[in-house]
Amino acid sequence: MVYRRTHQVVKRLAARRSAILAAARDAAAEGGMAAVQIAPVAVRANVAAGTVYRYFPSKADLISELIAEVSRDELAAIRRAADAAPGPSSALAAAVTTVAVHVLSQRRLAWGILAEPVDVDVTASRLASRREIAGEIASRIDAAVRAGHLPAQDTALAATALLGALHESLVGPLAPDNLEDPARLRDAVQTVTLLALRAVGVMDARARGLVVQAVLPAKTLVGA
Amino acid sequence: MVYRRTHQVVKRLAARRSAILAAARDAAAEGGMAAVQIAPVAVRANVAAGTVYRYFPSKADLISELIAEVSRDELAAIRRAADAAPGPSSALAAAVTTVAVHVLSQRRLAWGILAEPVDVDVTASRLASRREIAGEIASRIDAAVRAGHLPAQDTALAATALLGALHESLVGPLAPDNLEDPARLRDAVQTVTLLALRAVGVMDARARGLVVQAVLPAKTLVGA
DNA sequence: TCAAGAACTGAACAACTATTCAGGGGGACT
DNA sequence: AGTCCCCCTGAATAGTTGTTCAGTTCTTGA
Image (cartoon, each protein chain N blue to C red):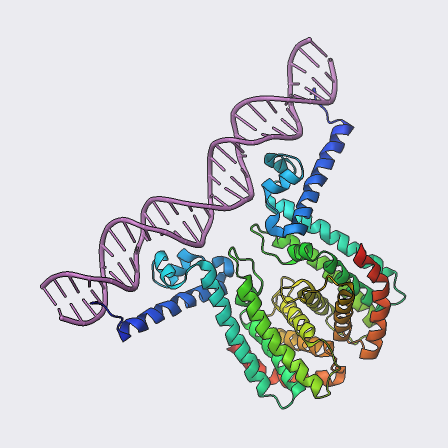
């Protein structure tokens, strides 16, 4: 064997892989999943089309990893926000608000990750990502139930329903179209958070208080 | 002019058109939208592939009409159920329950109509259908608000969120998988209806009562 | 029965992109 | 320097389906 991978080469390979993923992410953020085509992504990443296949076995794998990456970021943000909250109900409110703010800050990308038609099969990846995020929400609901703040319920189903409500109302085709305006955006986040909290059984008055608390820190994320 | 369309011919043409649409619907119910391909649909409808194009300008038009047809049926069912209810809150509960029962009774078809990736552009049709159904729900929420049963709110956003919650939790990829069992199915319908009613501000205790009332008549639909 | 024209057939076509692969180029070790 | 082999290139390939159209069959009214 006369050839060994130098540290430098290993770094370059990793950088290329990241570049390709980043290119895919940018393409998706700009033009949705439909824009994530091998040739254009390769151009963005400054490699040839064939090179993409040295890093990802197929387009399905590329997109699956993109979905996983974005979802990982979102999950981390949710955990961070919820863990910083003073109690279980606040944590739930913070989690919901974080989801809302996140999808709104990159609507096109979120739509692509969540639901946009793709010509290859990425259901497994989407399913796994959603399961993780829904699981996180479910455990936050569960914590609030155990603390006696919420009535007992099917937390998994509730978490799924909450995510569906958030996604549909904020990035779905019927979402309001003037969310560029920061004030309206905050209104929307507040409204859906309120709906979500009431859905799992938080009293109206208390829910309104939690919403205000949760939206204040999350607001800063919108700009980011 | 020696040829004129006889009444008989007109009827046959209409029948064929219906047959093609029905074939498309059956295909979608069996294998999702991916199964709605021109050649297989033509075989089902007992015509040649080219004939489909004498009735629908393109595959997009065929699927768009399929979506419109299914949604029309659902909207009618919602109106029927809601109009039969004794009051605005009951009407809202009935509407929500009807949506739930409908999508559950044909999950695969519902998934295809609502969200499954299609290789042609049917966003316009999907958008229009959803807008109509969301509008109906919104007006039911509005009626309950005007009757003083619910707090004032953005009814359009609330309706969209409710539909998102229902769809995601009942036909989405995270939906429970044992809904073939009628008892579990009823549980799921009750649970999501309860969530939906609480979300728009119905008190927990009152919501539970409404759910029971709404699910009883709707149950019969599950068998249909 | 026959002319005219509509309706239907189904094989061929077209377009789009993911994927492949033969060949060029450049580090890595002796 | 020399040799090896990995990485990269990008034009060619391949597979999938919606769509077309020249030819055939059927229907109508005289």
